[in-house]
Image (cartoon, rainbow, N blue to C red; front, side, top):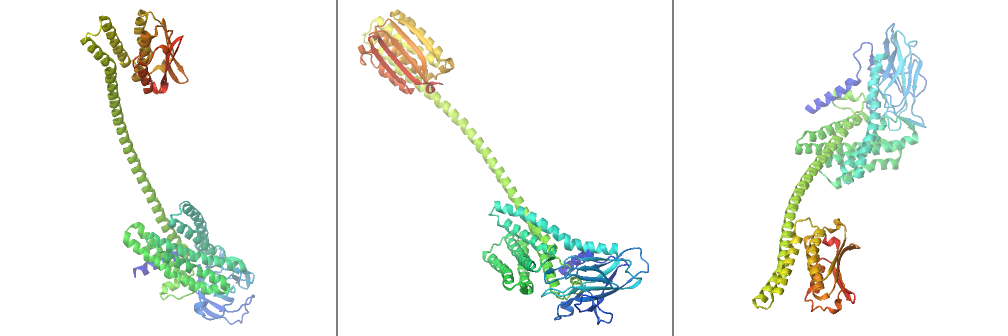
Length: 621
């Protein structure tokens, strides 16, 4: 009872937009006289008229009667003197026809011909010339055109009155019947393009594809209220398109509603698709004669299909219990009721409820209006789903950003710890190197000296020389470890200064040459110590074995290599064996190898040249 009362309220509200204004001057003809005559000229005065009640729907009033053109006679009263123009309003006149006033032709609305098919969805407004309008009784004759095969003659209640009042009635109905479908078709086209573009870019979003197809088909189907006259051959193909769009829309909306409710049944969707193809294929196979059967039975078969949409939508509401979920079943229920309402109108079926029968007689179709609410609801649900997806994406991005920030913080902490470990490791390695150098250099020399002194195997001069060597070795180590920002030039200068006195005391004239820019001499302490030890070994050999009077020490850059050369004018390396010089040459080569370089020793009658080359990139600190 509540649903029936609600539906009645909706229909009465819609009827308020179409009903007559409460103006005494407007006459709504409730009855007329009918002459089932196909003649083009107005009937004679003695014609056999039949009284009928308006609206006259032949399927109900004369079932089985031949479908033919007919004349209707409507009488109305006009005031003796009226300053206003008058008009007559026809809510519908599907097949066109002629309008006569007091024996004069006022307007001829195109009818069906062998070449032209018409189906006027719009209302008609015909102005009544004041010169033809009589004071008192007036006679309005209307010829209703021949309906097409399978169609039926319909004649509405006619409203006659002042033009201003009647025009408002016409404009209201014209807006809902003709303007609204045009707006709907245009909006559906734009919306479908947008949604189908999303589906094209995101093929996995099947629901957007179904919605885009449904919107496009509904916009195409709504054009039936816009396309009202076409050539007969073209009209048939247009009807094939119309039925295909109608069935496709229902199938797509059904599949979409099921998927929105979380139900995906491939077999059911295939069955829907197969049923959708039946109607258009039937029409193509049988031709225009099959349209009444297709329109009645095939289209009627979509009513239970639409009922499944209401069922799954209600189940979706019960499961979700949200305002968003309620939009779907409510709008689908409205659309289903509107579809049944239009089905009653199309086939002039007599409802058992009096007020509903009175409303359906208005032949005002609701499906093209109510389906818009369904599309809005579906679009709203998909939009809400899209917004939720965006929110989820934002949450995921925020989570990822937080995780990245946490990981960056963790990596920064790890970097600090690794740096501290590397620093500790470098310090430990430096300590190990210092201990090794002290052990191998100063420690070894002192130990050997101590052993020989204990055996009384050294003269005082030899002890003094050995101690001087130890002191020189210690100074060398201290110079390379001094905090002078790895200034190898200063280290080398101190080294050569100490050696100068010793070389001069031995009768050897020293000469130094440093041809390296300052910025290229920022060597690490380890590399500086190794290079100076090589130079120390080379100068020691000059003093001990070369018998030279001059020595030349040169430091230069050669093709990215740091080259240290010690050259004398003594007897030459040929006169000095590896054994006679102890392990000096071997140690020099070992130290150079540790730096990634090499040592070259060449000698002859002109003296000996010791050259050490190391990569500059390997020794810079």
